[in-house]
Image (tube, rainbow, N blue to C red):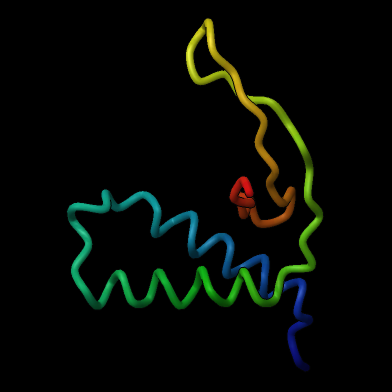
Length: 78
């Protein structure tokens, strides 16, 4: 039985989240390639549902952010 795309995406997001536990300065080239491949898979296959929100940078400063509530991809400001 073939795994549904939503389920595959779920496991890719979990894999990315686990890989994020390794500090960037401790990742070798092979590790970074795997991480980038997973990020690209998620970016391509997620049916993004974007949310506009506000985040606090400091107690005095906040800003808006747009991100996907499924995979947490963050859109860049134009």
